[in-house]
Image (cartoon, rainbow, N blue to C red):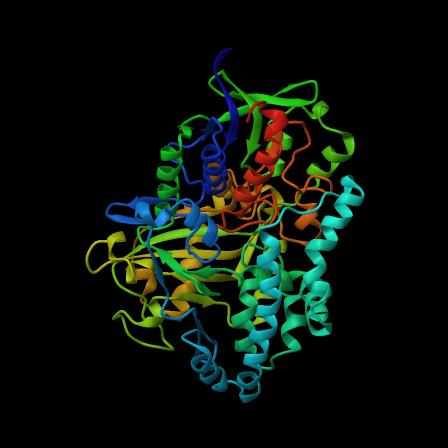
Length: 537
C-alpha cells in the first residue's frame, strides 16, 4: 500500500456539499484533498450529454434551495453561474380536461384557484403568510449546528437558543409547527382548502423524494422542506442554472481550485483508516492510502458506516442505528430528447408557452398520489405514476439542437427494492415505457416526440451516483432522522462516530436538496476543532 500524501482534511465525495466544505476549509488555510469516484465532480448535480446533441441535468434538475451565503462566499457568479427564474412555478393538468397554474404573483394564483374554488382563492394569502412564518424559522435553523444532547447543559442551552424563536412566536406558529411535523399532507391541506386540484398542487411537494403517501403522518413537513428556498433573493422561487445543474458544481470546482483544493477524480474510496478509535485517513480502491488529520464524508451515512469501515470500529448502539437508517425516496429519473414540445389536451399548442417553462405536474389529486404509493408497495411501481416534467431547453437553448428540446422527468413512486425477487435491471425499460405512456395520456404527441432517453431507476441512481436505495436525500426526511437526530442523536453536530470523522453530506442537517448547507455548516465545526487537530492553526 502506497501512502500518497498527508492532508489536514480528506473529503470523500466531490458532490456539491463536498466542494462547499472543501472551499471553506481551504480558504481558512487547511490543506484539503477531495477523492471522487466518478470522472467528474458534482455528484448528482451534473450536466451530461445523454443523447447526441442533447444535454441535461441528469439527476438533480432544478434550483431553489442553494444557500445565498454559499453563492456569495464562493463567488459562483464570478465563475459564470447564472440563474433564470421560471415565469410561473407549476402547471397541473386535471382529469376533467382543465388545468391549474401556480405562480406569477399572488393575485394571478388566486385567480387560478378561483376557477376551482372561491373559498380556496380567499384562503391563499393567509396560507402563504402562515407557511412563510414557519419557513423563515427553518431558514434560520438550517444554517445552525444542531445541539448535541451528549454535551449536557451546554447542549440543552444550545437547543433552547435555537428553538427560542419558535417558542416566542405565538400560538398560531406553535400550532402550525405541530401540524407540519406530525400531520399528513392531506390532514394539513384539508384544514385549509376544499378543491382537490388545489390540494394536489401543494400536496405534490410532500412526496417529492419521499417514498410515502400524502396520507402518511409527517409528510406535511416534506411539503414545507421544498418551499424555504429562493432564487436571486426571491423567496420561494424556483429556477434553472444556465447550462444545467453541472454549471453550479463546475463553478464550485473553480472556486475550490483557486482556494488550493486538490481534487482527485476516478478515485473511489474503499475504506476509512482507523487507529485507536480515530479516523486517520482513507484507502482508495487502487490501494493508495491518503493520510488526513480529519476525514470528512460527503456520502450517505449508510454507505459510510455500512461499507467503508469495519463493524467493530463502531459502538453497538450506533451500528444498530445506522443499520436502521432509512433510505427510500421512491424516485425514478428519466431524461428525454424531444423533437417537439408536448401538446397538452387541456392547453393545446406546440409553440413555446409559459406552461412549457415551469414544473409540469402529473398528479391531479391527493388520492392519485396515495394510490401511486400503494401500487409501488404492492407491485413495485405505480400503475399511474406521479411525474414532474421540466423542459429546461425552453429557457436555455444551449441544451438541445435548434427546434428540439430536452425534458427532465422526475417520477414517483418506484420501490427501491422490487418485490418477488425482480430486478430493476430487468424492469427498467418497462417502467420507462409506462412513464412515457402516462405523460402521453395528457399530451398525446409526447410518445412520438421522444427520440432518445436516459433511464435512471432507483438501482441506477445508486450505481451511478452512490444514492443508496435511489434516495436523493441521503436518508428519509422524517422526524426521527432530522435536526439533532440526523444521522443520530449525539452525532447531529457534523462530528462522526470516530474521532476525526465528520459528516458534510445531505445525510446531515438540514438534509437533502442542493443547498450547500451541510458542507458549509460542517466546515464551520471542523474549523472550531482545528486548534486541537491542527496545532498552530
